[in-house]
Length: 176
Image (cartoon, rainbow, N blue to C red; front, side, top):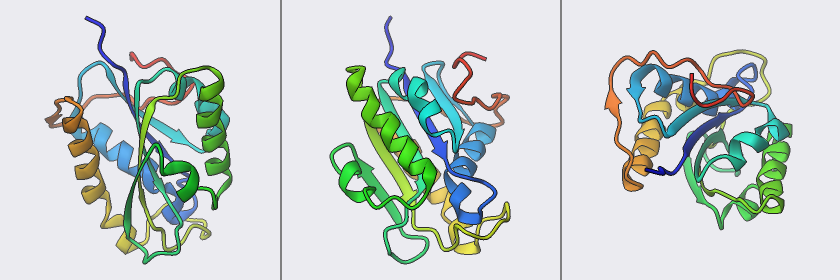
C-alpha cells in the first residue's frame, strides 16, 4: 500500500532563545509520541536550503517555527499553503529566507507538498541562550496539540508514550 509521506519539521536556531521554538516542539514530540512509519519528525534547525530534499520527499508538510508578525508574544498562528507567501514575506531570520526558497524550489521540481505552518510570536530572538522565554515555553504543549490535531485530521494515528525515535536531521533518511 502506498501511504502518503508526512513530515513534521521543526525549524529555528535553538541558541537564540525563542527562535528555537519549532525545534523544541518537534524534539518533545519525538520523546513523547510514537507515529506510523510514514510520519517523519525532523529537527530542521537552521538548515535552510538543505531542507529541499526533506520537503520535496513529503506529501504533507507540517512546519513548526517562531513567526514574527508584530503580535503579542505567545500568539499562535496557523498558516496554510495559500497564506504562507503573504504572512511570512517579512522574514525575520535567515533560516526563514532559505526555508521559503526551498519551498519555492519544490515548484521547480514539480512537487510542492501541502503545507501547514504552526508558529508562535516570539518575545526574544536575539539573546544568545538555549532557553525559551516563559510565555513561549508555555505554548509548547498547545502547539503540540495543534500538530496532533492536524495529523488526526489527515488520518494519522499516534500513541502517547516514550519514543525511542532517533532525532532525524535533513541529511538522513527517514528510516532509522
